[in-house]
Image 1: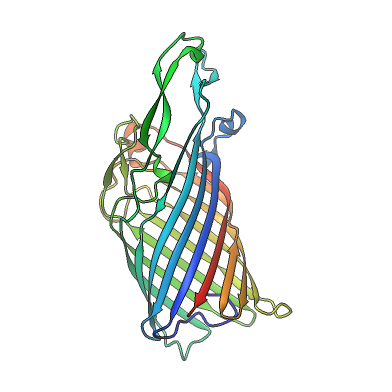
Image 2 (image 1 turned 180 degrees about the vertical axis):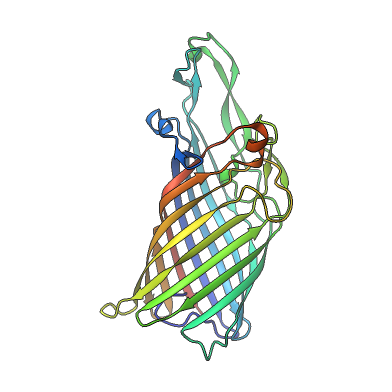
Length: 336
C-alpha cells in the first residue's frame, strides 16, 4: 500500500489479499453545482445508503509486474418520498408513505495487470505503475423491488383520495450491483518518498463502450427509457506523512475527484445516466501491524456538480442527483 511504512512492492509468486469497504449516504440534491435546498426543507429528497465491499487478490508475477482480481459485493437501499401535489402545487404525502427499495448482490468483477516502470530494486522509494484491465458484467443490472404506483386519481384538490397499487419494477440505476456491460480499465499509481513525506498520485478510468443494457428505467422523458452503461473515473493526489513517535502509523491528506462523464470516451452515450462529479478533501490514516496494513480515509465533499446528460441536452432539461457529504473508506491488506 503506497504511503504505508514498508515496501509497496509484491514479491514474485507471492500473494496479497485486500478487503475494502465503502459507506456512502447520499441525500443532498444538486442541479449543476447549485444545491436544491428546497428538497431538504420540504423533506422531498431521495436518500441512498450504500455498503460496498471489495474482495481482491493480487499475485506477484515478476518483481515488476503483478495482476489483481477484484469482486465487489453491494448492499444498497433507496428511499423515495411518497409525494404528490394538489392543483395548488402543495406537496401532499401519499397515504402509503415512502417507497423504500433495495438490492443486494455481487458487482462487476475486474482483472487488472500492473507494471512498475522503474526497476523496483533500484527504486525502493519512488516509482510509477501503469495498469490495464478488463471489467466483466458479473453483477445484475436489473434487480427489482416493489413500489407503490398511483393507480387512479381522486379529487384534484385532495390527492390523498388517490388510489395506489404495489408494482414490481427495476431498481434505480444508482443501486444496481452491475451495469450490464463489458469494459476495460486503465490506471496509474505514482509515489516518491522524501523523508517523512510520501507524495502520491493515483488515477483510474473505466471505459464502457456499450451504449445501453436493455434495462427499463420507468422514466418517460425521451432518451431516458433504458439505462445507460456509462464510463467512470477516479483520481487522487496528496501526501502521506510518517509519524516516528508512533511506529507503524502514517497520516495522509489529499484531494479526490470521482464521477461519471456526460459522454463516454469510446462508444455510444445513449440511455439514462446521471453524469456529474464530486471533488473532496481526503484525510487518511494508515496503520501497519506486522505484515498487515489497515487504512481509513474520510473524503469530505467540497464541490458537487450534476451535469446535463445527453438526454437532458436533447430535451432542454437538467436533471438533479443526490450526493453524499462524506464517505467512509476502510481497507485491510494481508500478504501471504
